[in-house]
Image (cartoon, rainbow, N blue to C red; front, side, top):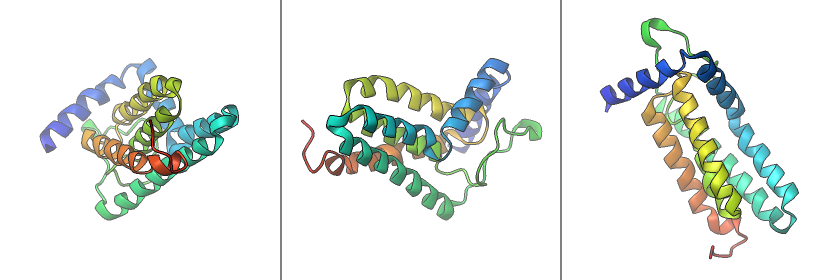
Length: 173
């Protein structure tokens, strides 16, 4: 697993040598910092969809909860961030030193599951953007693929477990 993590990271980090790819990865990484992109999306959803305002706000709360859970796991695991090839610096600064799990991936997957359950448009639009945020963390060189996979699993699980609460106690149907 360690070898595969390093090889995949190296391949994706190489994509960041293209200035256009690097700029897109930086923008996605910055937007995903502390779940900001997903919090904003949830608040816009709540403002625009009056019929499901409460569900949007609860979905946003689930996304924040998932992000907080990933931060707690990071404090326990304390996996250092990857070192770039030949000591190359990552393409973005990070809020912390620890890598596992990726909090960007956690909040992105939580948003994809939660917001996708609220509207068909969310189910079509959010997952590709969430995946792009996840991949951006590899391109900018601040996470291993296993960090991103674990974060995505944690986020999806958090949103799935909170789905009944998000929908006001009603089952999805």
